[in-house]
Image (cartoon, rainbow, N blue to C red; front, side):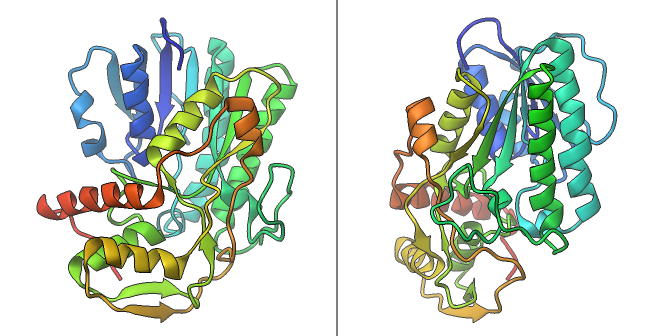
Length: 325
């Protein structure tokens, strides 16, 4: 975010990516209001900001009518949704409403304040993609009645709402399609492959991978993702979705082997059935981000994994429970 008298509302600001956004905004001199219902956000992620006169926390669910604000926001960030299948499938109705009703509530705040709005969308809008790598003009292959639809279709609806507001001249908005972000502050019970494999390796348990391990993902370290998000929020030009992710494609099997090597674990790798609608390949085309934002990831996978392992080891030391099998 640009320097100056910026006042930002960060919905989901106690979450993994949202808390890193709060840090960067505070460091840039902004005033930040963090809004979170703490279904997946953690107080520990923002505890270091307590007492900072430019930071305030409001515990609230974006599905409910939002408070009347005493300040006028210049920027509104929407990270208010669980992002991992175990979390968003735990209450699919709430997940869908968070993406639709919550996004509408936040868009209305941006409209009333004349603020710029940023939606944290997802690569999941592409579904089990038939195009590879995925470009922003690809319309996706979604199972609209499957167990992941509450999130996938919820984010697609959130994007539709956002661009409807833009077309109607109701607010300026940016949409980021985020690909598999990892790093410090990822929750031990996040439920996705990196946290699961690291936690299992640290405890010496079997490493569970799904299917034959040939399915791929593209993992982006959180610092790189946050840099891309902030550049996108401040970008000029027409509103359009922008992929933010690392174009280095890695199989789940290869990822597990790298984590075993980095942790020195003797855990063995075992297979489990592939979940329904789990994407087979995931890799972003980041040509638009390179052109519009002069952005691309800079942190290597081994460097990022080393930092993430250290973070999760610190959680073990502080008594935080690790992921279940």
